[in-house]
Length: 110
Image (cartoon, rainbow, N blue to C red; front, side, top):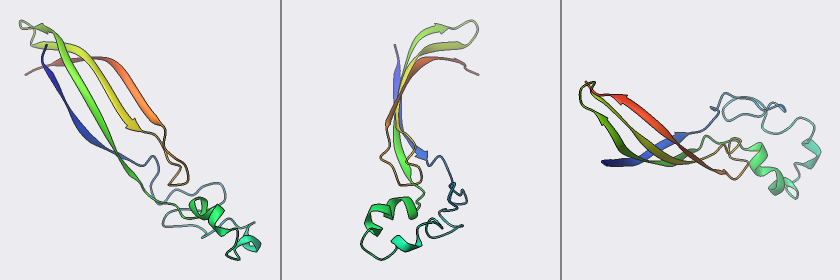
């Protein structure tokens, strides 16, 4: 059947206004967890850098679709798809997992 696909942008799960449980955010909130000011002496700070410095990440995804059923009388098509995209990074503090989604689709063409 007919194949189509392409790349798409995957925005971060949370925006910069989101605050984590310790009150840290991308554009609002505290610079560091309130209970950790004693650790902000420059030595252990590297371990906490990604937790304290939140980012808004935009990943790249890809989808492939194949039409394998056509109903010309009803102007309908159907087929299968496979999509791959990065998961949540917890605002830059974690490595994203790869999310793979497979399924069927249906569309009415007008």
